[in-house]
Length: 261
Image 1 (cartoon, helix red, strand yellow):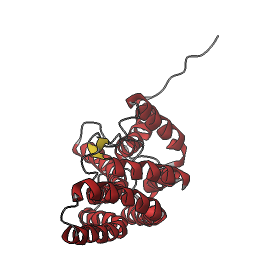
Image 2 (cartoon, one colour):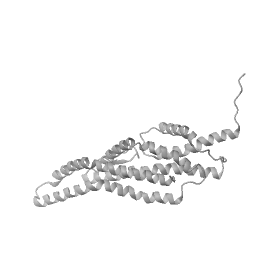
Image 3 (cartoon, helix red, strand yellow):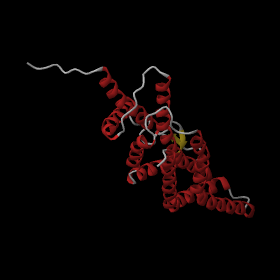
Image 4 (tube, one colour):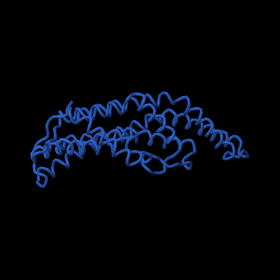
């Protein structure tokens, strides 16, 4: 006769704690990290990915603390797990935001500021140049195994930042705020060569206008500026992707410092 399998309340609490606490941090990362949080990614896929990652990483994690579910310590632990996951994803979002900022500068310099399309990552209208850069950056991110590096850092964060009421310090959050300036400087660095070249083109158009006032500069200058802009985009694309790679490495370095690696 088969015997019924029984579990004690302590065993069930320990198993649920070992699954729920990592799920909060992993779910926060999946909902905030680039590519994973894209609006084109179905919600069910994101939920399933968070559950699968939690199930796979459970044996690799240290045992969670035993706390009461409805207690101040449990509430602080929930906030800390969400904060750690969102912070790791937000840093990488700023890296991709640098490309959007640089693409906007390039689009306005070329006269393509009016040509916008929906960004599937953030659900807002961005210039087509920014969308073009984002597509290439996403492919480069996957080619460099950035998603695997992010998951590896997430698993390591459970050892340096175990599930506990304390976690990321206030000084670390201030470092993230200060690092936000890198997003603007990185985007400007990506767009600076093309901006300088198009500035010289516009100066040349101004000289032509003064030399031949009867020439319709709007009918001639706009197509020339756009055509040269596309040529310069093609010429500067390797440099833009290299700057994105360096910025991505800097972002991963910041994440490592935040989780004390």
